[in-house]
Image 1 (cartoon, rainbow, N blue to C red):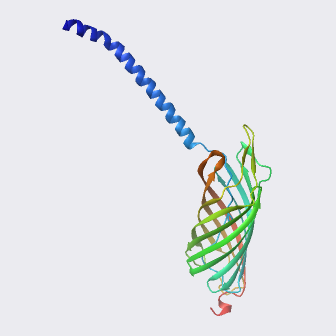
Image 2: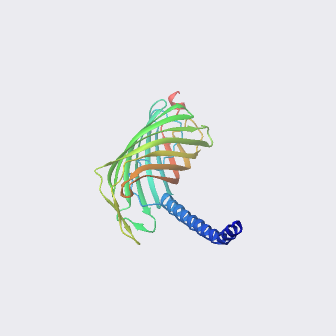
Length: 277
């Protein structure tokens, strides 16, 4: 009897091995398919529309202008993000109000381009900003401003604030800034991203908040402290993060942009020596 039981069990082992191997293989394939599907959902980049920030290429060292000095700066640059590229130009005018405090007014024109799968009828953004900068010392400053503008998604308002750190000297001033912003849609309208391969993507701009961090160099073209006209070249690179609710795909979304820019600045005024400072 025992011999019969063992012989039957031995005969069943190959079938059991075959069943077990088949089950494990099917289970492994199922788990791999599920994992691949999850990764595709988690890592896929969906179309998006968010409200733009009010400042794009700020190149600014921490030192404030002296009272009665005025600076005119023209800067241009471009950048890329997830499925989008942009380029633009900014004109900025600063004026020294009191010691260690200056105010600024700037206007910008930007043009953005979705990736090759989409297009948009009007890719232009116009914006203006009013700001102030207080230099705690020549090497550390606090800035704040309020911007507003319009684009194909309607109007927007964007407050921002940041800190600027640098090493002030007559020859080459390295600087670094870190700050945050909010962009609030005003009387928004739908943005249509026309698809070349699938259906169009239609959404209204979402309220956006994020961070900005940049680094750069200011290279003075004149070193005389009392000169009535001074000039400088500026260049830098910055990163920007944006967070918003992507309602068409029903999820909280985020994007990161990298931007590069250059500028020329002329400073007019009596300067430090002629003011007895």
